[in-house]
Length: 380
Ligand SMILES: Cc1cc2nc3c(=O)[nH]c(=O)nc-3n(C[C@H](O)[C@H](O)[C@H](O)COP(=O)(O)OP(=O)(O)OC[C@H]3O[C@@H](n4cnc5c(N)ncnc54)[C@H](O)[C@@H]3O)c2cc1C
Ligand code: SF4
Ligand code: SF4
Image 1 (cartoon, rainbow, N blue to C red):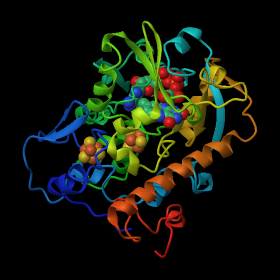
Image 2: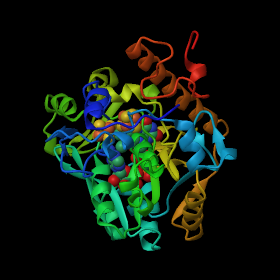
Image 3: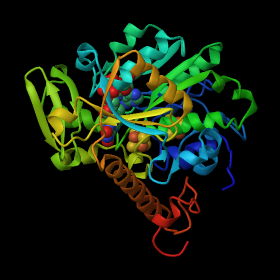
Image 4: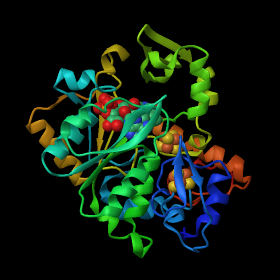
């Protein structure tokens, strides 16, 4: 696929106005014209540049996934379902306090804090809690600050805006926790399509990706929750495995369970066109575990995919320091994850074809992609 690079006008038409914007923040802080507002990006001023970083880095403009795999991973590690795979683990933080402040096993928090402590990175970009369930990108330099920012925020956080701000200053070693769409935007930056931004991305030293089925649109979520609870009571949220079919909201008064049928209309529209469940362009990707003991035990552990040598080195270091503990991966776990991941790709392909009404057109993806093309039913 020949990658087209255009400017702000085309970004606005092809991504924003078409409902494909994921809210990742990659187009913010490159110039003064785009700003993050709540979980959206708005345009303050128009720009006539024919080729802009905003268009080039956006995860929803034309994307050649195979070229990015080739650039960023070892071809021997590539799997069609979950991208590069060097190793697969079930792990969690050994420190119970870290786990208590984390979403699941605290693996992400442990790895980011370790990377800072060891000087692998000097700045960690995370999603801070924010106000009224609206997360904000936050750069921290102290491992103790990472531990204060565990847990998942299910509304998109435009943390790449914070990455762009810090990277512009220069001279940093940056690590970031990213959703799959954010990891893809960073991968596009790493392909260095535009000379003026080429040096900035070299400061990126670590990407810890999160598995992501979907994220919620802030306004819709707020409207749903306000009908049920005082927002000030909310302490966290989780989405247990699909058979539960619910969103759990943890509150000061106890858990509140909301059926997914009620939550689905709150999903950010752009997420239905997303083909990546496991953050394939990360050094390591982390999600919740699946164990035979059931969710009550599994929710205290993580599934970890190691994708790159630097991801492997960090995980090995955490094992050596005994700050992560591991258990045997139950038979069939990786296969189930691959099936779930492929199912997300199928849904994205189906929805993109419905939008384009053309079996040869996957809008921002390449219909000849060797993983996606078999998912297109009918002639291509
Ligand atoms: C929108 C969303 C959807 C998800 N969907 C799934 C799923 O379908 N299946 C699955 O297995 N796991 C999913 N996860 C990942 C899961 O919720 C946990 O983040 C993961 O298991 C890691 O757990 P942990 O205990 O190691 O994380 P922690 O140690 O608690 O660390 C979590 C880290 O994630 C960062 N973070 C929180 N929210 C965001 C955000 N919105 N954007 C970027 N960074 C953020 C925090 O700053 C923190 O550093 C999702 C996460 C998000 C944010
Ligand atoms: S770069 Fe991210 S925030 Fe900007 S238009 Fe694209 S998807 Fe939306
Ligand atoms: S489902 Fe995809 S587009 Fe939506 S937040 Fe997750 S990674 Fe981004």
